[in-house]
Length: 324
Figure 1 (tube, rainbow, N blue to C red):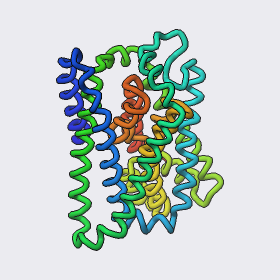
Figure 2 (cartoon, rainbow, N blue to C red; figure 1 turned 30 degrees about the vertical axis):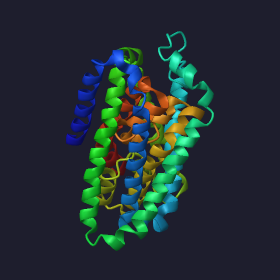
Figure 3 (spheres, rainbow, N blue to C red; figure 1 turned 120 degrees about the vertical axis):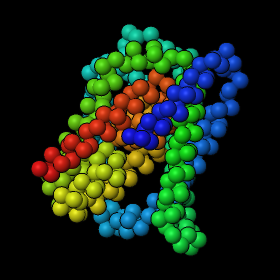
Figure 4 (cartoon, one colour; figure 1 turned 90 degrees about the horizontal axis):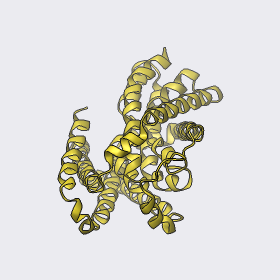
């Protein structure tokens, strides 16, 4: 919670600063390029940390199939549930309800010509950075770092700084845009409905996975209830005596956050903006927020933050209950 407070404090400070500079908005077009650079550096470091983490790499060949399998079910279930909720509420793939004034019409029109390939290009670049980072972390870092704990701590601090920089960019862009209050009013209760739908989809498909695999239904639900929180959920599951499920949970949650970082741009264009916010789970409110802002616009950030916040709240409640 301290980190979350830090992230949002940075964002609010830069939002307030940019709100005074709206008349000079045209002079800040270069920020998008800088934002991309920071995103690519961040995901490279994230991949490097995973590649250098023996717990991650050793688990990949032991329980990797289970983790990938439940990730497909759970992420797909979340997106499917959000898709159904979106259709019921009469909202299009860009998060706009029929009859509402489209406050981002001009932006959408300008980017329409790039919609076919920009999401795929960004996703591929992010994937490349993650893979290169993992390879560098696995093959190079152990040869130059004797103290891996020091490496993880140092790069962890670097990631905190990088996320602060990302959210500073996001806050600044939101301040220049000046439509946060209007976006909040437009979202209303929908900002709660979609996270609830995503949670129901995750848990339901996690239970289904438990029915057809060596995991029990309770374990399947517990793993799916991690929502990308790869520190808390695996610990709760392992402490309850479910060692294999705890290992599956750890790898699954790493996959969910990483896949969110990689896939949000592409999935947003091809399936829907709101569905894309359900992919990373709790990371939708911090690490993935700048990617959502870049791929879906500032209007969808309200939904993304709500998605991550509500899932974050649910994890410590549902995981123990699922294991019963």
